[in-house]
Length: 153
Image (tube, rainbow, N blue to C red; front, side):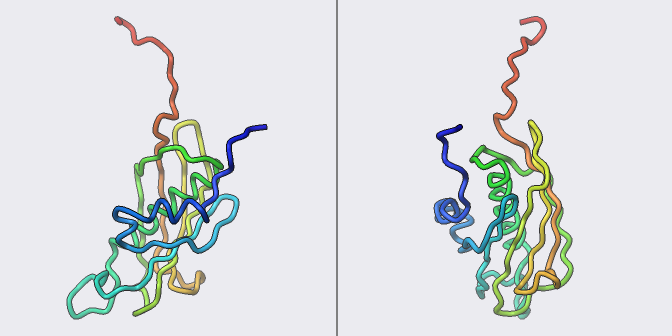
């Protein structure tokens, strides 16, 4: 039995989102399960995409989904291990409703020795009417402890 505590998104999120880009966006913990995490992106005027439009920019939603995906991976592995986004595809289905927060739920459905695979969606209150869908692959940093010698060394 390991003495290492299990990864808890509820307590990790405030620490991980209290600084940097995630902190500036104001990302907050919403909910989680065994292999998924949901974060909230509060609606703000300064996150609008175009002057004269009341539509949230796509960048903050991408950042929301990237952070939710990382947390989902750590929850699925039940530990923190550095990961890097290799590929994150976002299919925007519709604009988010004005003045509504956007929730990003990501599920880590497979973890291998060197990669983690995630899917998810962003919604503004009704998950059956998503704002966007995502599919992503993350690389586990330092996961490979390759001890083989390189020929010629």
